[in-house]
Image (cartoon, rainbow, N blue to C red; front, side, top):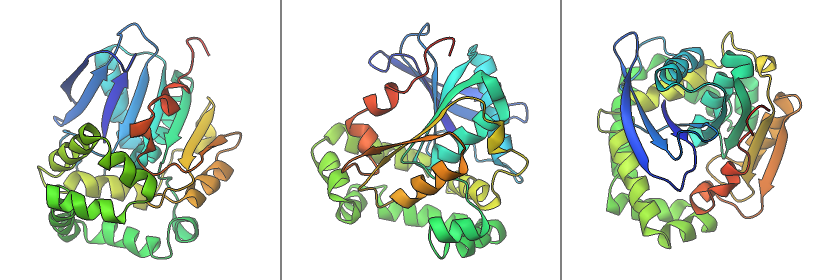
Length: 274
């Protein structure tokens, strides 16, 4: 997992590396006014060291808490984008009232067992088993697959052909976003696919001792009706599993809709003192 800490996203960005107690490095980026309302965005790509054996959602929440202490961040809004969805929910469950609000955009949810098979895909339990028991060979395979699939210009062209119309139009009309996506893919696989496998392993294991009932602040799921990567039924099921949560649909929105309209997320940032 990597993180971004935002104030006003229209201001300058700086990035850095936090050192964790076990020696690992955790990559992060900071945007905006240091005195703004903190928004911590969890996502799947980044410059962090690969997680060690036994990594879990609870471990990721502990890593995030260490980072925020080093940065001097107190209460905050947690957000998870795509594969970061489960990590934002884990942070909210682990840190209680410190997390004022949780927002999941186009996000995965930590389903396990029959729920994973029903809501994600029929083959999800088999895939999760493979992640847990074939970690090394799967990591090597993913590293090659990711770079061949989309971590190159030729691969990006292939990716575009598989995306829904909304995402395809967004990337074709926004060269900067397309370049950023390519850069992220290359950076995420620079050390191999160990980080990606570690993230998938968290989803395979589930939340463990963390309980969604421990989330004290409001939870909002934002999902595009045209998302074919994390399908809309995932958001419907996720809302049902988080009591009191709200589901906000974006008509015609694809998986990458946040790149076209960051205000989708920024509008949900919790006010100070919520």
